[in-house]
Image 1 (tube, helix red, strand yellow):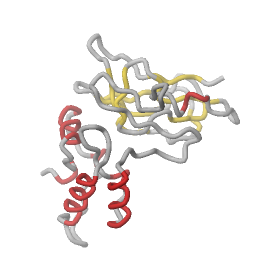
Image 2 (image 1 turned 120 degrees about the vertical axis):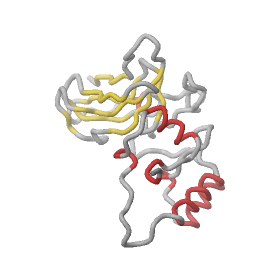
Image 3 (image 1 turned 90 degrees about the vertical axis):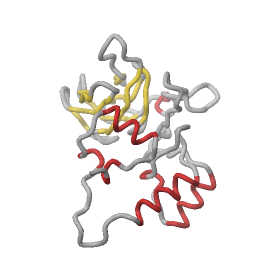
Image 4 (image 1 turned 45 degrees about the vertical axis):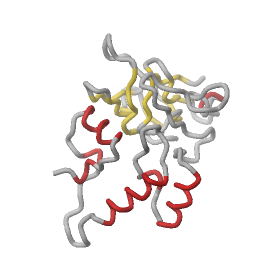
Amino acid sequence: MATEVMMPKLGMTMVEGTVEVWLAPDGATVTAGQPLYRLTTDKVDFEVEADTSGVVCHAVTAGTVVPTGAVVAFLLAPGEAPPVTVGAAMTTAQGAPAPTPSGRSATVAPAGGSGPRVRASPAARRLARELGVDLALVPAGADGSVHETDVRSFRERAAARPAAGEVPPPRADEVRISPLARRLADQHGIDVRWLR
């Protein structure tokens, strides 16, 4: 039977947390005590570990803001099918992403999981195809969706980056920055890798 992995409540005032990065990929086999994902709030970064052994089945994508107590993943027995609720772990009955306590919408991985689904407008998808931009790398707007202007801004910032031969920036998850500063940078479309 599937074991639910929930967003923990790490303090009296915590109402939500962000699944910053998955440390165990979808479909990976983990043992009890192995780190599953990095959780961030405005006050703390925390690695959530597996309570039991099993096969990881993500219910939300990295970067999703999740209310405390909500399911973020399942640990399955080998060969066990994912629960029906995987695609709907963070969705409402109408199929729209459920609002989080902060008012932002959560993005969920599709059931059957062929990878994370990026919420984007049709114009943004079309422009990303034309410019050769990977939508998964584009910071979403304030409403949690990627729009045409977000794709254009991302492309302009990418064009302004150092030329070949220069030292590349660190990965975004390697940049030392407070969770609150990272959230503000994400909200304003600032790529923290280029801050100096």
